[in-house]
Length: 385
Image (cartoon, rainbow, N blue to C red; front, side, top):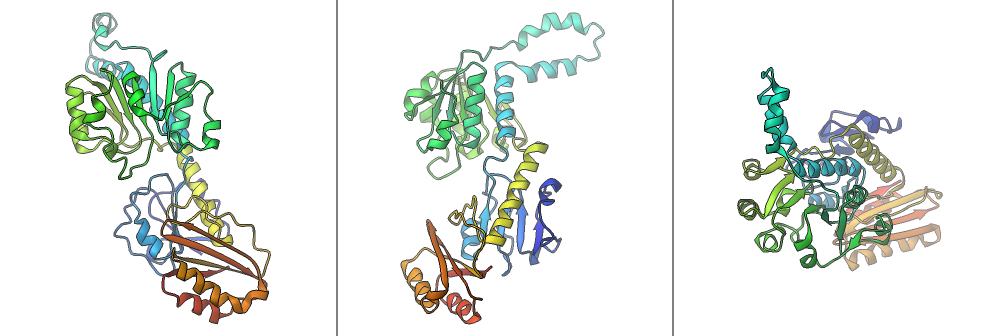
């Protein structure tokens, strides 16, 4: 099984591959691909490609529908880099409260001053700030990263208001008991000293922080965006900064417009760029790929349904990836009917427009059955394990 890396992937992760797998530089002939930021939208999909694993959370660089139609499962690694991002968010919040950037620049610009220690006493008042203790932070999105940010802010003595209409019971149980959940943003916007964004970029969230929202905010608020740049409307943000509604905008996604604005603290997409995060993401990605290859199990897929499977105890396992259409399910059942006495287990799952079918048999799968399944219109890929 050939594995290729489109970006540099942590060796600690790659070392998890067993001897069944070969790391290959033949990208266009790979069975499995590992990727971080490489833009795959124009990347060719070879016929033997089974899966792509993104060593990170965001998958905007991968054509998910195109991959799904080719029967390629795309994985990501949610939560593996969450601590690294959380720590950078807290650093950004502290940098916005105290003018650390201005102070560092002052020292750098005056480093030749022999009496710099004396001069500092006169200059330092220009870089004063506020403490975060007792302030209120609104955390929008309480998933793997947002939940950790909320807890860290709570531990630092801030009042934390969380917003997440899709908050699972498991995620809620991980939150500190003093975190207030309020799913009416209009009630939380006016009281927040800090707002931290931790949600995916969707049509419903694109430019959700805009002039209508800025009108509701407390003057002097700090906006922290470590999710995606397009969550915030650029021109409306600039106006809010000019009108002193927003004191600082801290972001890990500085597009050209934002990078040229005043009162912006911008990082070059450093959230997951820690040794630990890169290792964790790579390890998770590799394990997900191996689970899919060896068992057909799908963990953290972004284009096909997640399916938990046990190790194969029968002779063969057929994995079918297809369009989510009732006619396809009936066609599959029709072809499997001749082998009914040999079937030991069947599982099917759907996710949006795509479906997953798994059938275990106590016989070797004949080529005639594979060819029959592949002939069904809407079938994307058939595998036998």
